[in-house]
Image (cartoon, rainbow, N blue to C red; front, side, top):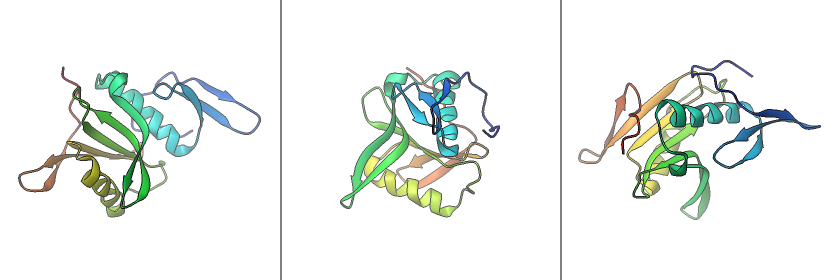
Amino acid sequence: MEKLNLPSYPFRIKNNEKHYLIFDEVRKKHIVLTPEEWVRQHYIHFLLKEKNYPISLVAVEKQFTINNLKKRTDILVFSPEGTPDIIVECKAPHIKITQDTFDQIARYNLKLNANYLIVTNGLEHYYCKLDPDNETYVFLKEIPSYKI
């Protein structure tokens, strides 16, 4: 798999007869290792190890409904109070991040109302904070670390 613009982590990878599988610490199971999953697993570890978010506040592929359509977040981090705090949208490294990507995560946030949005393809990372007073997003240099 491609080297990403994130720290390296000691992933548990195995090969079955058809695919490589990577162990997801959050879901507690092996997942087919696609390029997007490679990015997602790196970003999960980044949130847990570098930004100190507790694993108990992290959900992967959390399902919700918008206009009777079922959608899933790649990574959703909750606040200690149980409200959505961070939505992470992961793309494969070869996928260019476009306005459509930001529109997708902004639509998700109309429903989830998280404080932060992150869009990443593992090579580029974009961080936004919701400014509810002005109903806009402010781009940040990085996402804050977890604070109790």
